[in-house]
Length: 503
Image 1 (cartoon, rainbow, N blue to C red):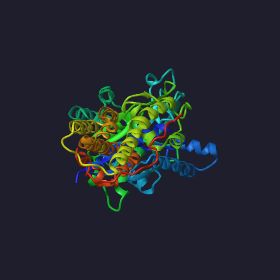
Image 2 (cartoon, rainbow, N blue to C red; image 1 turned 30 degrees about the vertical axis):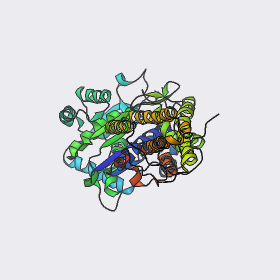
Image 3 (cartoon, one colour; image 1 turned 135 degrees about the vertical axis):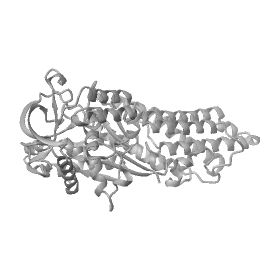
Image 4 (cartoon, rainbow, N blue to C red; image 1 turned 60 degrees about the vertical axis):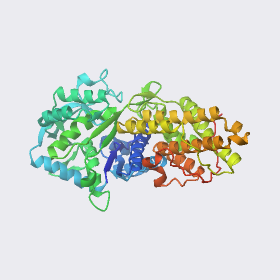
């Protein structure tokens, strides 16, 4: 059986989760669900990054220990994962004892082979993103992501020989032009490498909240090295047996563009040093913007995903994330935009379509799905939809995939109006035509439900239930989405309005 491994970045626990965390988690879940529909063995990893100075400082401000702080905060991230209906196979915490042990083993290996050495360093450090900056990279003397002034840090640290792997990294990029998606992010990462790589500090001497350096416990492992290793360490202890051989290398690491350099340069260099395969793809998406700026807890312009889901529903939130903003690009989100999409597309075009089709089958055929009388004009459109979905999902074009599905939803609505079943029902001699149309509409909805399942899983299962199907794995497989898969004779069911219109 083919395997598929997808990850989110692990989320930092210095504050509560916001919509940006939900966005990446849902994207990974869409991929995981789709590949399960393909019949693949899937491992979907998410979790929390719990070491480093921001967490330690947040704990100090609250008057608790760092461990008490992260234990409290992680619950909120675990709740977010649960509430967005993420189907993750494991939730890793970097304070897990097994993770910490495996981090120490990894860096000990690099140290023993001469890839890590001790030296003094002086530089500008942003504690919010846990990164050093050069003057030229600052925005008016401030961190370009957080808008805060970095502090001058001087200490003796252990360094990783990143420069040693510059040529091999560049060669890997040239040989794998799809290593980083999208193209602009690939070019950006390659320019980092081409501009020359300096060795990087991989430990901190003044911080105590972290994984101790195994050969020098007075220092802790740099939080980003600790965090990046989660993608491998989790496979070692997430199950009853080591899953590394089954799932590594990862198929996709999903992340926001602000952490591109860590994933596209430092992470693959560490893997090369350890003699391990590199992930197949990094997919780097843009920012969700409110008021024209990236959402950030530091700036205070965040949208609470819990409040949105409580008010409008989980599936509506999941749908909006990839319908409003093209996945991979920056895009503006707002409550007004959300409500417009909700009413026009979810309530009117999908929910109302299902209600009408079920009502007509109940009214004209006593609730039983009739047998079609011949070939359907929609079969070709369904076959084209299958091709486009496969094409779009293969390059993580989630928004393009959803647009194609929605084009099919709209074609079903047009088919209702053009065929006018209420008129056909008045003429007994046209009973065969009515059977054909009602079957086509029910079958079209079934196919929509299958393809929509990765995006709006609760809704898709409910659509299938109303069509007399259970919505189990067999009903949801991509192979089963071919036209004609709906057996006549099943009974439709009523239900509540899928998406109640907003005033």
